[in-house]
Image (cartoon, rainbow, N blue to C red; front, side, top):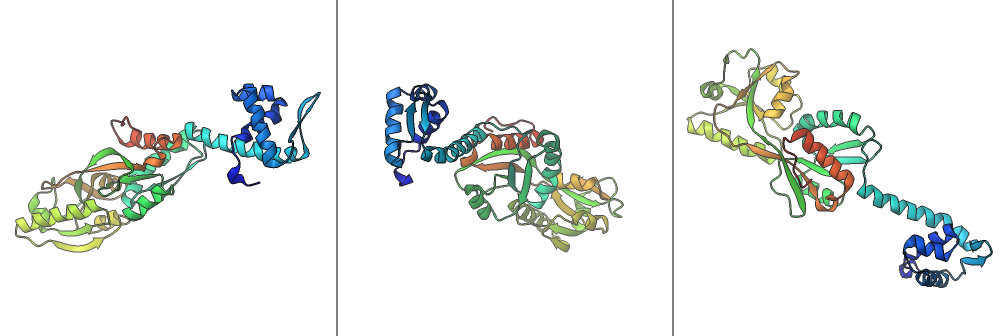
Length: 310
């Protein structure tokens, strides 16, 4: 028998007759006419070249071949039903589903502690993995179902993705507590005279922000004194706390540092554009119940107004 020529809907009829031992009861269960069930049984008999069920005083009893097929058919249908129900229903308290999130090292520091803390009670068996990649690689992985959600600043994603703004972010300056040139505030003159650490990972917002900073120095006829350039946030707060360097970072990263490093956070002494932090997902998982739960959870934790199109 060639499975390519078999109508898999016939297996529903097979399973129903197996359980009810009756074409009449099987028809009632499947909301079909008895003639439709009889026709399906005829097609099954032809496909398997076997009677499959024999009419007896005790009902329609399976043949030897039908008994051999029974467990496989029942398990296959149960697995398919579970997959369908999983898509339409998701219980975070009992689910052990795994989610993969595309996020930068900043995002991991800002988002993950609160998300993991929430999941500890709301979804104790959920597993979360974070990955970093280029936007191109991330888009391909999301299209393939290898990444569930992307969180950050995204300006060049292709069509086919949904996007929800989470919050507006802006840059601040951090310096060590006790910096000899800084007292109550940080005026532009001190910022221009100071030595700097430049934090510039691959994300586009940092490159754009640094262009703004360079223009500020040029406009004031100054040359920026850059002592160190950093591609990662790990260790950045310790570098600032142990030196007289200044560094500009997103505000939420600065306040995350502020909890355990000897640093102070100051507003920028010049105007710079803010930017949106969003979550993105591929349209293939837009209606999935588990994915909807994840998106709603992220939005409820990090957005004041949860979007309606979650």
